[in-house]
Length: 68
Image (cartoon, rainbow, N blue to C red; front, side):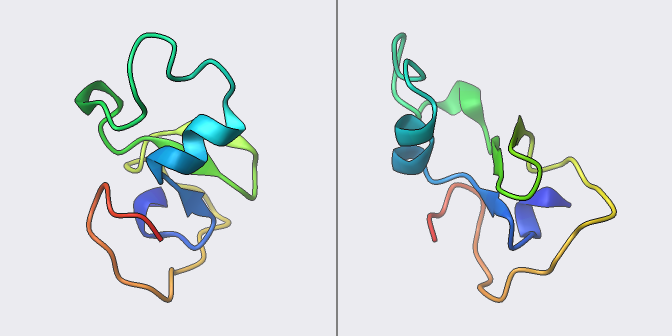
């Protein structure tokens, strides 16, 4: 799953920085975002539940919504 991949970033501050206007209606801390994030390898916004063949295990174990 992308949520456990080294390329996946779902830190709210990071998302607000790389997606201008993302916080127009609310913050990236909002529950409606769930655990969505950015794949740094494919430059895509996606769910932490997604997956692909380029998965690289994250060296840092973290819980959903936890920043790196």
